[in-house]
Length: 421
Picture: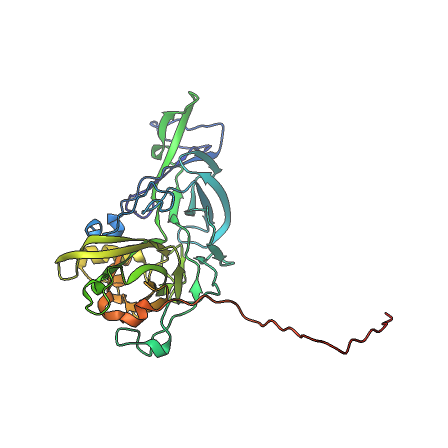
């Protein structure tokens, strides 16, 4: 069997039983005969260790208590897909043109069957198909297989230009169009696989019904196409008004974060190459978990202090123009992070004590480059410096709606008329 090697994390085991009529002069020839030409495909999904993608220190970096058994939170890592879609291409010889593809929907951890012809070359693409937001784009000549999401008409959580400070984006900052977050997606592309006609390449075994069968085995790996980022705003000095000599207040300056926007993320991925699109977009999330107060947190300088912490889990295709998995491997092996040309900003929408909201933006380009396949992104906010006392205590005014209510009193000139229609 000839195929390229793949690192194993998730194993998709393809076992094929093929009807062959072999002419051979070898006296050691195995008998190879089956009453079916179908290929059983068994796909097993195993737990994916987040350290492989996040880095070995992610549990130390992550300071928010995330109760995975709580339905309001759910798993912090990847979840097992229920279905896998197989697209199998016949090749016109080795490294040949893809042609005549056929697809099958397969059940994870179930026994699935397809038909293959021996002495043929194949390309095989497997990915989970339980999508809500992902859209497919396939070339007519099967040269690419793209996945992306739709753009959405949504505001971004960034301050207006007049509110920018030296901590905010420079004039070259671009929020980009907002796109839906992708679903969790796993897959593998196996190219130039040869289904042998040599009986020595088959395993002689007995199936579950006691029948004598020969199995042709192919090992593959399902790895993520989408990547999880754990966003962690840390609010420092949130109770700085407790010792105010004129107007002491023991409550928090920041009550919550209720929205975020991340810029500079890829718009999609090409499944054969695993390369992310070059075009950058933004994503939004309003699913920001409740603030946990008086937590012991690690500062960037290695010291510890108490602070309040919020959290969000977002899914992305990764950074534009890279293969995130290869970038992660390169980072682990050489310490060299991918070049992050467009950069990344995060906008956070803070709910203040008086009920008003204020968006702020922070540059997270370096952190994102150090986490090309997902990971923990921590933003430190000093509430004593970035918010004034007037901003914090300003009461939000309820919007009573637009329009007007007109009334006319003492109308004297009443006229009755008949109108024929």
